[in-house]
Image (cartoon, rainbow, N blue to C red):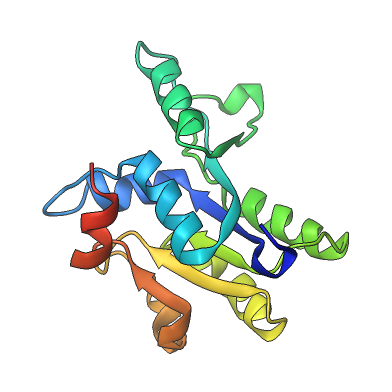
Length: 171
């Protein structure tokens, strides 16, 4: 893939999961199909899938394996050992820091694709747009998109629950 097309995706895993499986009607993203979609539609070379701490369980290894097999780079949110099991994922700061670190170190990439509906990313999105380093924010659904994004230009966002996109990435 040429440098001109090297985009990076950041997926807020908890936000994606809650925005689809807890939505009405609920649906599940096929991660392999979603990874292909990101590559073909947005020229994503590297896709980072951020997860918070997840309680140990029978299916946890299967979850991690499925994310990695789909082509995502799995990144875990670190927690103080006293807080394990008490906090939600809260990967927002980690994603923001990773993007800003790449910019600061002048890493070679074109633009960022962000998957989340969380308003905590709004300042980052505005900054990336100003710097011509932003491709798109993909909201898992219309209902839970933060109202902070109502002023963002339509060319910078899409909804994963739009019929055409959903058909391409649904399980």
